[in-house]
Image (cartoon, rainbow, N blue to C red; front, side, top):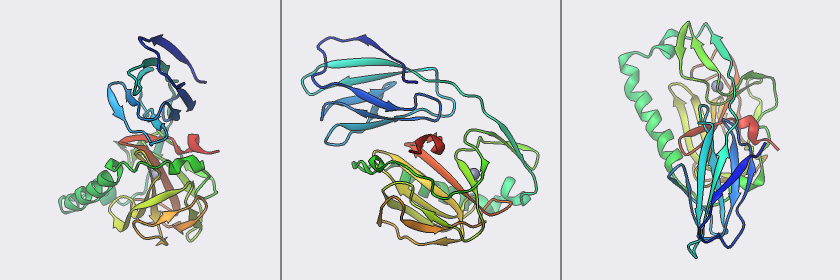
Length: 261
Ligand SMILES: [Zn+2]
């Protein structure tokens, strides 16, 4: 799957650059390079832990190639051209949603803006800690009722692509943290996502748990992989009980299923 091409080097980097993960749209790659190196992906700066770990991700519509540049503390440079596997996405039609949740009323817009600001703030934080190194498990086990990337047609109206994985489960089913992290956001009632929790897994990697019926963690708490964070519900924009699980690196939505061990 990994396809890299070493393009050029002036002075070579002193410590080897390693990359492991999914070089595909929606995929996450964990990298390692000399501590203190400057990393950039397509010209954008990428944060690193003190011991040299970093994360790069490819969005739903990522270009076929990305350029990764590592500049180490001695000035050595390595540039790699990464081939990113394209995917095809499904179309999912969902009918029977309350019309106000598909076409919000003017009085809903302030609340949606407020919700988005909270989510945006959590995603913008860079926690320089490799909680993600715990690896990922399913937060809930159940049939997949919505996959990453699908084009959504809600009550007949084309909407944004689905940016996570929907897992169907009966109301009250426990939800666990799929990986180590810090609780970044707890909101009782968001317009679209209802009762919502966000976890911060470090270096800009966050995850969201939506439509819950109960929340069992507080903001700022450190959670371990497998620890209960709440219960499945049907709050927000839903037609039935399920968990919407989303994973985002910075502002790039990734495919949660690709993270699983
Ligand atoms: Zn969903």
